[in-house]
Length: 228
Image (cartoon, rainbow, N blue to C red; front, side):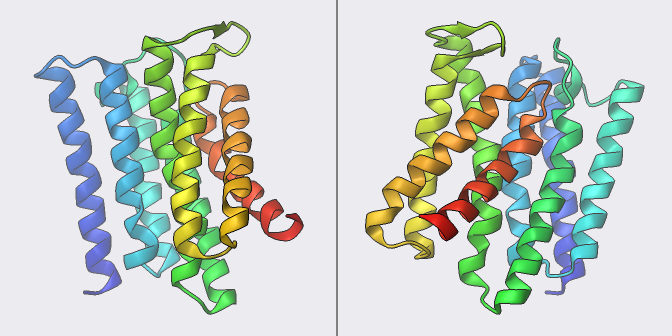
């Protein structure tokens, strides 16, 4: 199939995801925090298809730009309640398409300059998966098992521990498969990446963790590759 056909499939998949979360919110009366997290995780997983199936950065920009516009309009005109009907002020949904495109762009030029495809996927997959999975997992654990609340950050120890553990194991799996580091270094590098992304999540406010976490992961990977 051509890039354009995959472009259509991925775009429609995103719209179906939003339709599902809207039905969850309006028909099943699922709390907006849950539907928002569902959209967060689902969007991240769908976006993993970009580097595998679309090798035209302009098509990826078009998809991200479309959903960026859709999310901005939904905030201004009061639709997509499943994403926007949360009590706190957050810009996380607006930052989401931006960071996906920017991380894709970094992967795109890394892949072109290296001439290797399979090993470069980690530069896209790892930042996006940690952002898509660890962030909502930390929020849910922090809500039900906070242990201790950091009032300054409006975060909890429980949530940060959950973020660190999940990001650590995700990183171990991806580093092991990518063969960028030898097996002795994988654990230490994973600790470093998990700690860097956890601290970034802790200090991020108003949804900007969606923007900062992937770049924190990329920075930690760069430091690990060049200085460890």
